[in-house]
Image (cartoon, rainbow, N blue to C red):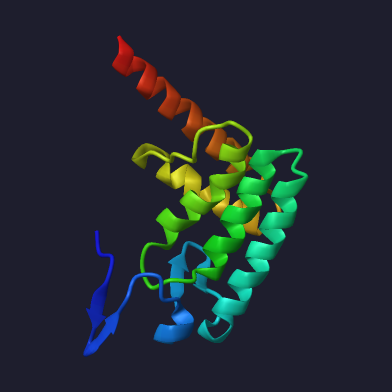
Length: 149
């Protein structure tokens, strides 16, 4: 895993956002090209996301809904040059952990369903992403239980 690297002649320390590196990020999807949050506003977006997440987790009634929302807004912000998916799943696990659930776990064989669920959440339907998070959690628990046998 790359935690710090050189980009051309410049060293990029871990944790520097795209506001510092000034990289614009696009992703190709089956429906076209998606442009992520412009680098000039990444830090202010992260601040707004953190404030909203704190408010949502304070009086949370559905940790899966909060995790789905947090996952979506962080993924769409895409604040770093590398590691956004891992960081997004880690941070989106916080509401689940606060509610006593395990963290988000998405296996490789869930990857297609996971990406489709993220796209559906972007279009307003968070049910598939919440189900994907739940299914991944259930599968991870089963794998751990299998280790005991």
